[in-house]
Length: 449
Image (cartoon, rainbow, N blue to C red):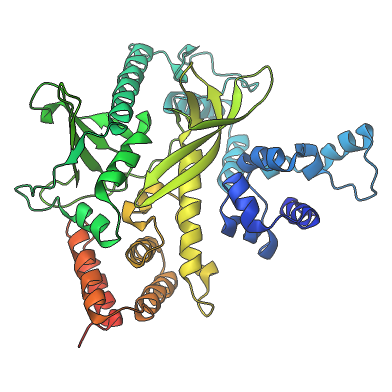
């Protein structure tokens, strides 16, 4: 029996619905559904939280012994039947195959390159690094080659971001907050507030919650824009399109927040795709579990994307008294799974969702795509259309967008307001095909009186 099938069977035996299990683990319901419908298995990164939630050991999941015996010897012996490649993705298998085909000189060059490329090399494995490689040392941020004071720079950078983040979080809890909604000279900064107005979100409360849950790895300080004492200008680098937040922390601790997209010459650009699986520092909301006599924990975070406050359960290593180190890819994976789950729910039964390229990077998804309102759904469908790699999948994604827009039930006045807000929001964007997409949305909304 496949691992996914076994989990589904256990859920059925215990009377746990897929929706309930999704809430318990933070795994997208669509992902759990795929274990049953498509015969998929959960990724290795999810095994820990699944076992903790169901009070099982990994051996219980991997055990293919159907005889009913549960002796220690039997269970131990079944682990020999586990395919070691279960833990590897297709890319990882290909990388290993290519590595094994090379001679010793080639293998040494590859190892040296990887060690220098990544800042979080795992030295717990029995890897013999080439002797001519830089000396590897461990610091609290990660394990990195010792080059030109990287450790000191990383430590100082983390301390700075931690202090900035703690200051913002503290200020967000105060009641003396007001928003600066004045229009900038470019005229391109008001669309985010208009978006919040359109979906009926109180802007002040939204900003407070957003800053209250912000994490050090998301932000960088823009000192050049801090024109006076006690000012904080912060760039949230975690959005697909970056967002500036300017905070004036005066002596009375009143703060003024001005939020607008980072744009150059009036055009916001996508952040580059992040391919590194770096470790980042986070402040936990709660600690949900701890493996005894280790620094391994499971913690929960709240990440605010768009109008949604997304809860995430994630494996973490204790760093200091205040926070933990987690894999950035684990956070991004949880967010993209949420978006993919939303996306699948938007497709009608006659469209083949299996032909669609799903989101695999956070930078593919605009922050206005996180939500269940019509605006957020259209934004998500636009993002999905833009990432399709072949004509057939683009046609399917375009059909999904057009069908969704044609089935929206609202007055002509409401449809026009929706279209106007979409056009305002996408004024600041570098995708050249967007005007054509918005025209197709207009046609399918059928706003003509």
